[in-house]
Length: 205
Image 1: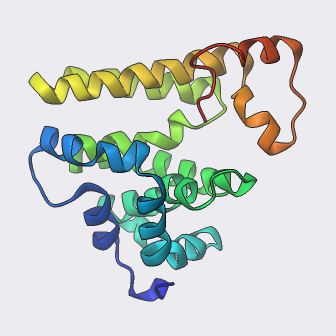
Image 2 (image 1 turned 135 degrees about the vertical axis):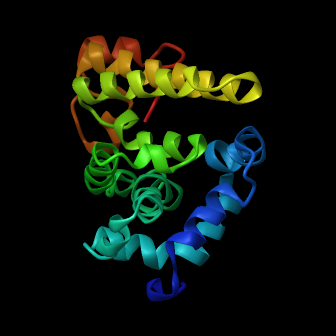
């Protein structure tokens, strides 16, 4: 496992987004890694970034939050890489509170204006993962604005992100939480939730 002291925000961002300045090409090249990378991506994250993830979970790397790029890298460690490292266990969600706090702080200070649109999408992800109706609404509004700012292939990509944001919002609006998390977190599932979980599209985390 790599020493967390040797990991930089730039290394995290380059791993996740590559180096292209073409926003649509970035999403084309990396969406498989982001949303379906499987064991290969999980193992790469474990080898390179597990130490940094744990450091952030333990309350470290706070200085990363001082810049828009560093704050986004911090969010990725806690909102995305935790999910790559801990699928199938409650630790999947262990970084969510810290990631959300950092994302909201970044959004409130205007970080989105300093980042390209694929990066802004991931700054918004902790809001999409939040079991909070107000934050879900804020997330959808932000993704709609992000998509409206784009055109062509990039707009199509961002419209897809927005569709998922709306799906997450609708579930939390209905139940106040994501019922698919219940079993993993030891929560009791209501009869209405149990019926919902038999339907396609019910398993957003």
